[in-house]
Image (cartoon, rainbow, N blue to C red):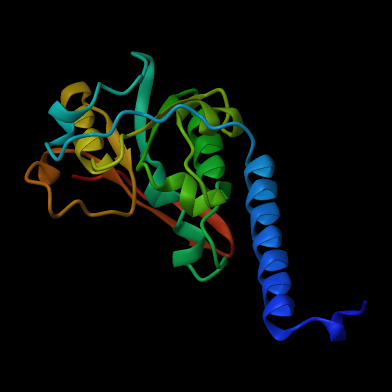
Length: 193
């Protein structure tokens, strides 16, 4: 018996069955390639960052805070790249390390999605950044800006970011340092309030 000898309904059932099998195989292969599921971080409530999540693991040796979610976009904003990358951040961290200082890098929960298309936690980002940095990813639903400004205020640290933080009431009380890219090289401007 050949396929052409089958009634139309039997041929249609065979095609649908084969399609369902291919879809199931694709889903299984996709799950296998992603690896084991990681434990999810508890969801933050819609409160302010100060009360919604634990304080970042930033050491007492930290001299400067970096808005990691902002800095990874600097090359895109300058028209040099089409996607965010860790390159501008590692360049800034190298500048800080040359000064003999330690940096604390704060990321929004979406930073990993911008970089690799998936969630990245503190440990994931710490593995790709220099030892001269403490790394903290804020919980989903909270703003990294709140952590940055609160910590900068409490510890008297400056923040490296091109964000103006205008929507935060304490933005005028902190020292900010902007960066610019000239001829493909990052330059940090003079800190100011």
